[in-house]
Image 1: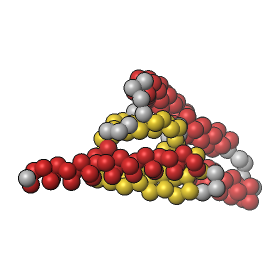
Image 2: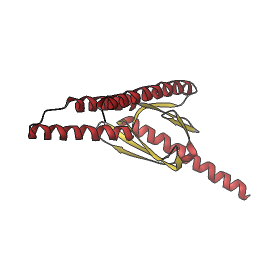
Image 3: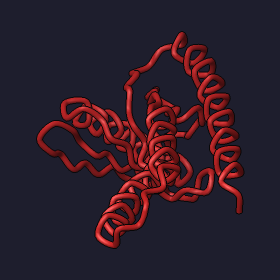
Length: 178
């Protein structure tokens, strides 16, 4: 395959992701006017994994090229940098938490579909994993990276919502039994 097709494909990805981010921004602006807790998060997704793997493969290929004495192909470095920049553009989103719905990446997720929340705290950041009761938008869970103090707040808010949903279910069962 000609190298120009790689650049063309990356250009299409830039166009697509920037368009999606603009739409997501407008959705979040509209939704945030209604209220709720708003957090800036970074989702852990496929593109982040691709950028990570591409970076390490580029380093391995460069070391092999230097050790073997072959000329260095700078297209590899350019494509890797373009993919990493694309990841930085794609890897910022907003999490909006309301009593009956959370909005992540411009998608509405009803709170009764949230099964549990796990938090792994590190020195400067936290990884918050939201597990769903059923598959939503093709996902059974969604992990996001956030600031350490925001991670605990997100977990507390979502756990309170889960408890409220369970109370509603038990109250509904009690009223049906009567």
